[in-house]
Image (cartoon, rainbow, N blue to C red; front, side, top):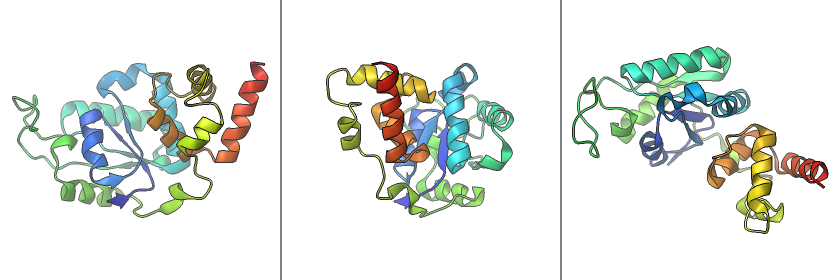
Length: 199
């Protein structure tokens, strides 16, 4: 599996699943057109883009182009890279019929096509920064009271709110985002301010 330093944003969970079988990277979703109404998700994309860079990898159809253009307008260009799938006609295995335009999306691409698209976009391969010794782990979240203990869910929600992350973010997605944006020491300081703010 190839490690990619930048985060990658795709349209939906099937695209995300496909990418995670090919690359070791943080993969975020727009939930299709849901990104147009989700300010916190857009704020997260901006923060990740500024910290690590963001590769926009949407489908080659009209909907993918609309989402790509929206992100181009919402995030400064110097933090964005763009990966494009070729126009390949067909349908994904899980679908009964092809999409509206008859093209395969990110989900339907073979691993070698995905890697080539990322290379052409200028992705940084094998940038091992994400596995530094101060990487935040699930154990750290438990030690900080954010997982597995009494009031962990409430504390996690306070943290998500303070950081401007989406409230419905999964624990694994939160952990990935924290590792892209903060060191363990920074997280400890933030959690301490949460405790001070809330007694």
